[in-house]
Length: 318
Image (cartoon, rainbow, N blue to C red; front, top):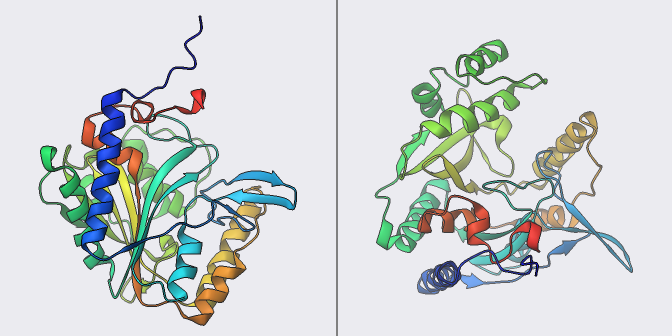
């Protein structure tokens, strides 16, 4: 008899997931942060060229399964919700592998009056609290430029595309396609910088290039940088956070640039979230927000080596 019906995660891992979720809810209850739910299906989609949305047909037309609950949560913030968090199932097409599942669990939260540095404090407190039995110790905080100097041996803000390409080759990375400057930086970050981070330890990388701001504010300087951070446990990226952009005109311009890049790359055209732009126009309170991948976190908490081990049903059994 076929055993394709059989779940993937062991009972012990199911209990570990339940304990993690209970710990998250207790953490935010203690800090007065409100749990919310937002729709998984939307008329709009993520414009980010690096993301591919799954599409669902309905009797009223096509809708997009969200890649993150960010946009509706910001609408709640603009409507006066106060501090909020959500444990959401999210969907990203084309992502399957050791650390990726097309359907996964994401914790996202927003804190009024926080910048990215204060939010890093809270992210560390949550993660270390959940990892009490396997505490990775205090997190190191690395400026993006310092992370590249330390682990790739170059200045990411000054290096030319040719120098970035040569650095990749020096580290045995063979890439035959065409990449722009940010593409080379992303490749070096994932293949050179992140693998050089201390195993079993937490590292925040912050101060990203302005061109990689996504939905973050910009910090003035020479060069300007994005008010953005990522958290890694060892080499594995767990979280991406921002001091949130609140300028509706700038957000619309970034959406437009995303669409231009999508068109140039031959990616599907997607509808922009006009409701988000209207909410920003009405007034998003000063806040910082972060998205943390819960399946990856559970891997780190339990020592799992593949994401399928922490899912009740892996993608091929769903």
